[in-house]
Image 1 (cartoon, rainbow, N blue to C red):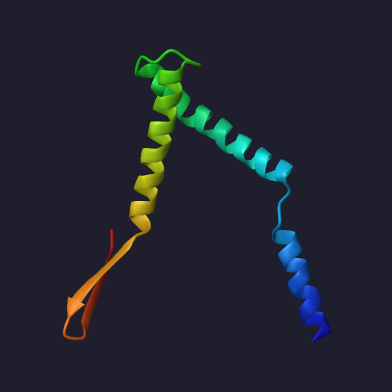
Image 2: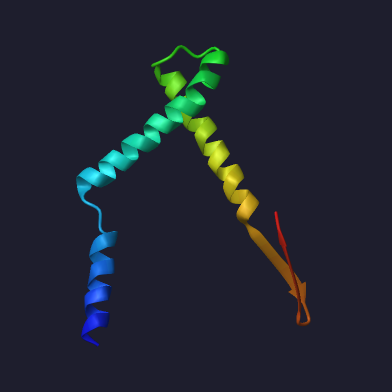
Length: 88
């Protein structure tokens, strides 16, 4: 029992991130978005480091994430005990 409690506490504490770690993770995400989507927005005619360019980067990143989520969604429908599920 004692081993279980120690293991559980270790896992809980290992899962906690400090504010600095969370901020660093967010900064990495932002840097990745700018690296991936920034050139595309520039090619679309947006001037780098302007608000419209940043909005373009966010819009493209959001669209990509929504598209990725859509690929993992499962829809189920049916009646009278028959259930059909499909992944879109």
